[in-house]
Amino acid sequence: MENRIRRDGTYRAPPPAPGRDACPACRARPALVAAVSALAVAATLFVAVPAARLDLAPGRPTGSPVDASPAWVGFTPAFEPLEGPIRIGLQPGHWKIEELPDELARLRTSTGAAWGRLRELDLNLAVVRDLAARLEKRGFAVDVVPATVPPGYRADLFISVHADRSDLPLRSGWKLAPPWRASAWSVMLAEALSAAFASSGLPLDALGVTDNMRGYFGFSWRRYEHALSPYTPAALVELGFLGNAADRERLRDRPGFYAGILEKGIDAYLEGYDRGIRSAFVPTNPPRLVAGTSGARLRSSPDRVSAILDELVPGQPVTVLARRGEWYEAWFPEARMSAWLPASELAGAPGPAPDWTFVIRMNERAAASVDGGSIKAPAPPRVRP
Image (cartoon, rainbow, N blue to C red; front, side, top):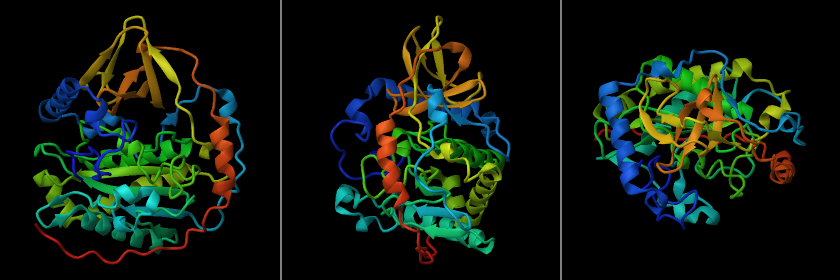
């Protein structure tokens, strides 16, 4: 994906007006972002932050969304649980992007990253095709979904598969994220996939998750008609960087390796998944906490020896996205990426009340979702740079 325009590569069209989907230059302080980038790259090269620092193991995920309201957990949505075999939606990033509907017309030219004749799209297709074949043999219902997501698409899980490009040839590794308002199942899916990647030995991208990954248009059911149901657990995965020689060779020659990692993560997620726990499908509204009396340090991973990205002054507000043990994942707006803080450095504060309006409004649309008829991708051509 084209890193110079969108760090996660999802978009290559001209940026919209400043806001959540705006380009980094619209809001980020250039000097700070440059410093953060340099620090994170240094962490990758010299500190060598290993994937094991995620402290994850295959099996039932341990992460959870953070919700300040006890009433939110007990909310029962109006949609009916899916029936029949487990349905899995797989999306090769940028596939049929030129067919996006008018509401997403500005993204029709977002064809993905490239390195010579090697296209990200072909890599995404190869991995998804391999993974779909594996899952179908095991009896799962698999939909290979193009860039145009069927309105209100429902599945037991949805994974959008991408590859990235950076102008820094030494930058490498994977990263992944659930949507902004992640349900408990979405967080568990992301944790299970992270555990699978961590156990693979592949490096974790030190620059971390971007807001465009969490705000991916296919997840943005509040903004677009052609987006997932809010009750579809989802994650977007960046497999590696075309600009890195090792990542590029692996992505080109070993799609089955990545398919195997994703399959392992899916299996771990399904071990704890239960369609009957309906409240776990409800999107959460992230609360805001504040830095403690001694301030707080934003770190690149949930470990006290990981790189420090920035420091917060006492009382500075923090938007919390998820919790992993004693660690909280928080949003770092200056660099438009997430970071980690220990609970001991945060102070409690009332979070926002659940936005019942948007949840109730989406119930009817989610319940009337399409049936998820299978959409098959053609076999990608063998490509080399």
